[in-house]
Length: 445
Image (cartoon, rainbow, N blue to C red; front, side):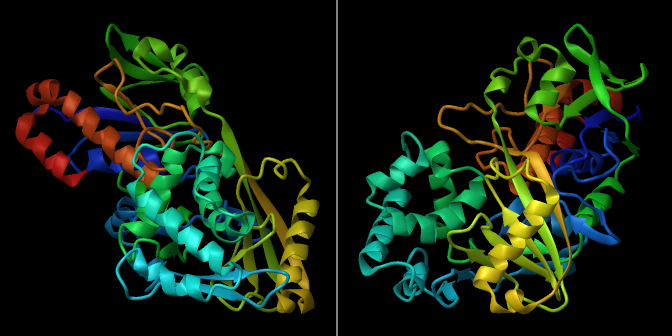
C-alpha cells in the first residue's frame, strides 16, 4: 500500500488540533506547526508566579456537543464539571445574591419558575422577557443588530442589564448593539429554547493545556516555535509550507488554522485562492484578572456580577478566583496593577468575604484579539478554498456558532472532512483509501 498523505496543520489551537486528530485517526501523517511555545492557542495555560493558570476562563454549555465529544475522546471526561441542571448565582451591590434555576419542565417553560423569583426583574420585565424568548424561537430571519432587536421587543434597560447582557455579552464577546441579531438569536435558541439541559454550564477542572497536550500527543510531529510564513504552490496545489528562517517543509495537503490577519499574511493574496473579506473581521479583547486570597471568598463555583466590568467570577480553587471581563476594549491596555485593583474592588463590593479577605497576589491575562465581532453583514468563509488540498479552520470561520471553543472544534473537524473529500481521488491512487475510507472519516467527523 502506498503511503498515506502528509498534511501540514498550521496553528495549535483547538481548530488545528481538531483537524489534525480527525485526519490522524484515518492514518494521515500530521505535522503540526505552532509559532509560540504553547499548545492550545486561545485556550491554553501558563505559569504565573509558580501557579499554572488558564489564559482566561473558558466555559462551554451542554449544547456544545463537539467540544464535549473531544473531551471524551481525549480521556478527560473525569476532569469535566458539568451542572446537573442550569443554575446561575447573580451578585449585585444592592441586593443579596439571587439565583436563576431551571426547573424540570420542558423548554422554554423550564425558565419560567426561575424568572418568577428573580428579584432583578419586575413583573412587567418578566412578561416582556418571556415574550422575547417566544419571538426568538420563531424569528428565523432577523435583521440588524441584537440590541435593536431586543428594544423592538420591548426589553427595558433593567431587563438588558439583569438578564440579556450577563448571558449574551460573554457568549458573543461584544456589545449587543454591535452583534448581528441572527447570531444573538442563535445563542438564545440553542442554549435556552431548544432543550431543557442545553444551557448547563461546563468547564475543565484541570488546566486547559491538558486538553491541547492530549490532542497533540496523537499527531506524528509537533513543531513548536516554528512559524509558517508562507506556502509553496505549484499550479493549483500546495506542495509545502515556508518556515521562518528560510527553511521549508513538504506536504501533500495543508490546513491553515489561524486568525484572519495571519491567514492573509501567509497566503499573501487570499482572494487569489477564493478567500474574500478577511479585512471585515474586527477583533474584540477579553481580559481576565486572577486573584489569590487568604481564604475562599465566593461561596459557589461561579457567579455573574451586575453593573460591573467583571461579568463573571469563578472560584478555581479555595481562595483563587478568576474574574472574566468580555468585550474589554476599554480595559485591555490598562496596566496589570490597575486591572488587579479593579477586580479586587468589584468583588469586595458584592462579596462580604472578599472585602474581609487579604489579597495575597494578583495577575491579569489579556487577549487583544480574543474573538471577532459577529457584526451584521460580516460573511464568514467556509473551509474550502480554490485549491483542493488547502483548507482553512478557526473559530471565526463559518460554523454557524459564535467564535467559541465549540466553533473552533467544529471548524477543525469540518476542515478535515472537506480536505479528505477533496483528496479522495488522489488518495485512492496513493493509499487505496477511496470511497470507503471517505465514508469512514465522514462518520468519524
